Amino acid sequence: MKLLVVEDERLLCDGIAEDLELEKYTVDRCYDGAEAWERLFVEPYDLVILDLNLPGMDGLELLRHIRAERPETRVLILSARAQLSDKVTGLDLGADDYLTKPFALEELEARVRTLLRRSFIQQDTRVQVGALTLDTTAREISAPGGPLSLTPKEFAILEHLMLHPGR
Ligand code: CA
Image (cartoon, rainbow, N blue to C red; front, side, top):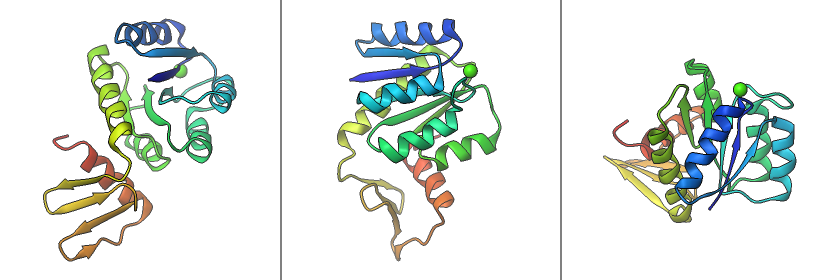
C-alpha cells in the first residue's frame, strides 16, 4: 500500500507521514501541488491525502487531474475549509472521503484503513443500505422499484452516505 501526503504545512505533513509509516504503510510526502501532480503522473499510489490550500496547484484542481488520469487512486481531502460547498465540490469531483482540520490522527488512521480496504473489494461490488442498492461498477443506485434517476451531485452525495453508513 503506497500513500502520498500532499500538504504544504511541513510539520503537519511530516506528522501525518510518520504516523502512517508507523502503521506500516509506504508514505511519500509532497509540499506543493504541482510537484505532487508530477509525482502522481509517474508513480501509482493507492491513496492520496490531499490538502486543498496548496502552492503550485490548488487541491481541487489536483483532484480533477487525479480523477481524469488516475481513476483507481483513492483520495482523502484534508482541509481547514469547513464549508459545506467545499465538501460537496470535493465529493462531486470524486474525492472518496473528507476530513476537516483539526482532526485526531486516530481518526485519520481509521479513514485510511477503510479507504484502502474498500479499494481492495470495490471491483464489482454492490452495497446494500436499507432498501437501496449501490452498484459501484455501474455507478447506479436502485430502489425496489428500479434504478433511481439522479443528477451527478445527488448521486455523489447518496453514494458517499451509503459508503459511510451511520454517519
Ligand atoms: Ca495548506
